[in-house]
Image 1 (spheres, one colour):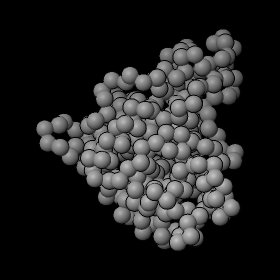
Image 2 (cartoon, helix red, strand yellow):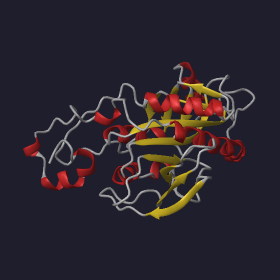
Image 3 (cartoon, one colour):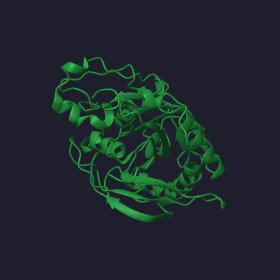
Image 4 (cartoon, one colour):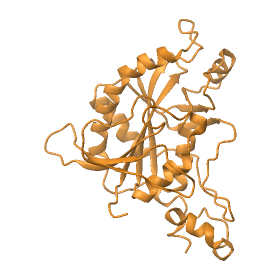
Length: 295
């Protein structure tokens, strides 16, 4: 693949394209893990500020254009593998979430720095098939990208909460009141259905990852919002889409050219299996991910 694109954007619910993209091209990628959610839309993203050059980015609609794929149906491995094949080193993820804190209001944005897993049976690793690796995941997002997104929110005039825990539930149903109140007692901040697997796989692929989470509702714990409905979520979501487009346009030119974080070397000491014991087929399959360590 000739063009190497360093920055990827994942659009969540409501964000199925990127305003400001020029010189666009659709790229369909086949992966050993199946098909990604959609074709990748590559293009040059022009910044809001004048005097700055545009950056080449690759955009992927997480649920497919038209929102066709349930959270539990997402092929997370194919999505991240596709970005890796494009040469992506950083991913800015956009996601709709419910709030578990009074102060995190609908239409506010949250940049979480922790995750808690409440999913069931989702595949969250590229490894297996004769190769074992254990990456560090104590700090599951890239601190550099968290700073970039938080500053971009402020510049875009969006109320932002930097840091917090995103609890990832299975879905597609929303929480029960018992679940929602339990999450609050555990001091979680926001709840969603998609981002944890992306973060885990991005770390294995040595791709920096961070989430810009758009609050659409108070889940169902709030006495004045005791039932979340799809209609309510989409109404708040529509208000957020214009803001998140501005945030991305502010964020992209502020992403540093060089990486100084540890994300790019996450596998350096994580592959446990002896190289000679790894099946040749597995080496070929995972070449974009492990090729610089195992040949």
